[in-house]
Length: 342
Ligand code: UFG
Image 1: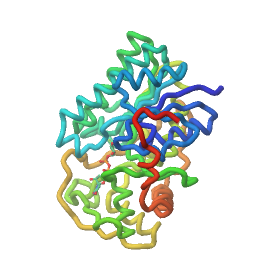
Image 2: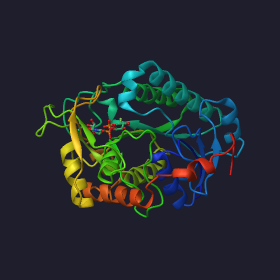
Image 3: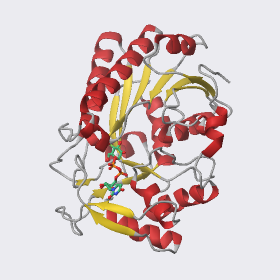
């Protein structure tokens, strides 16, 4: 049955791919995004885009005036681990404020389902790898802390208001829409795979590998890269599941790749060398984060379509080659005027 979903941060990387997936299922989508980091051009035409912040009462009023909303997917957040170590109070205050304002507005408007974009950064120094949902939450950065707070806030929203929620802890979102309609374009870009590909293309300086003295087999950090389209599928499944009960899932492929392995994979995919140098560690980076996603596989039947790192990188490379400027000038042209709705 077609439903209406509010997607905050729907102009961002993971948010926009989820919008695409919701639209493909025939749902109506309202995107609320202040376009501070997202791109209007990343919002599919079939979605309504309201420009504004998710803690702005006026923006929320405009959104909820568009009609009853069946569920909220909350992506809008400050999301860089490294930045959060430099600006801890801004990260914690802003992510908490925006999330709480949105949860409050959702329950006030009778919304019964809420999906939170959460993170592997909940687990700063995990006891066991791969990390399952029984791992104690112990963030390694203020960014992770802010998401841990919002997960807790959702427990209270259920207890007090009956709001059902899904907290989806993404490990390292990567790749691009397999059909090439959307991709990854952060400004500034800090994520490994886009930086590797831009270094290959000569569009940026050589990649700096942040530390090769970690306690890992090759000394570089290990992460679990997950295709953004597989994350989108997990959101669709979670939205169904939380009709009945709240859920929390770790989302990854269960396979870790070191920075050196990502470089090697990019060299296989592109057929070119990745220029790189070794630099110091980046504060806040845990040595290894790998998910166990057995629970969502078992409970919701989630099966990643693109678990292979080379495929993830190939999709990212295809989009980057077709869009060397990312969303480029399309982004600013479409984003004129505050409060626009289309
Ligand atoms: N890295 C480099 N050089 C770079 C950029 C990254 O060596 O120029 C390394 C990092 O040190 C890390 C790995 O590549 O080991 C991945 O780094 P990213 O910045 O791409 O991603 P993070 O692991 O820091 O963070 C991402 C999301 C967070 C989320 C986290 C959970 O950005 O929101 O995954 O694992 F919390």
